Amino acid sequence: MNASDGAAEPQPISSRPLDSPVQPVEQPVVQPSQAPGSAGSPAPRVRARAAARNHQARYGRLPTVSELAQLAQVARGTAATVLKDLRNQRPALQIVRTTPETSTDQ
Image (cartoon, rainbow, N blue to C red):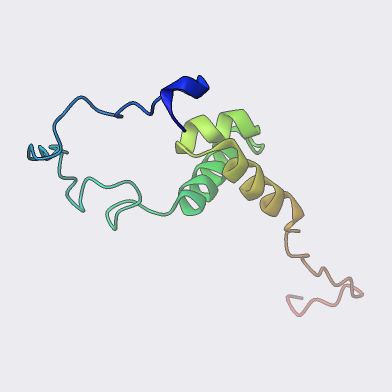
């Protein structure tokens, strides 16, 4: 194509000359101890389960999804999954046997 066709000539993307060196971008270094989910902190589901159990022991009920997400510092989806699992767990049944009263204390 030429200029008489009315087509625009391609323009360079950058005004920087091609022979100039590229400057590196400085990014902060994140130490493993500072990284989210590092070995120093438990996994989100573990934190959420512990927070839900603590809430249940303290208040006699499981927290709401919003309460658990805030308490355990986890996403709402994680909180919902943990609460669903806890609600589906049935407490173990306690077997109570009734027998005629036979006492040897007489």
